[in-house]
Amino acid sequence: MAEPFIGTMYAMTAVFAAAVAVWFSIRAYRHARTVREEEVREERTELG
Image (cartoon, rainbow, N blue to C red; front, side):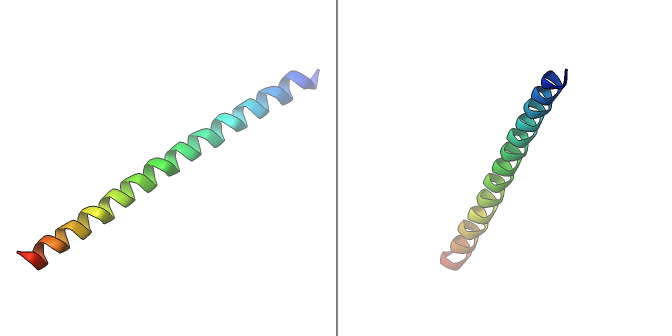
């Protein structure tokens, strides 16, 4: 009786973990892009 419920809980946990991983990946990408844009902006102001 509990086996389907346990399987569902594992599936929900896996989906949640995947969603969190995707969210952190997007967050890290955006942060890296922002940092890179700031570095490029600083380089341009130093050269120009």
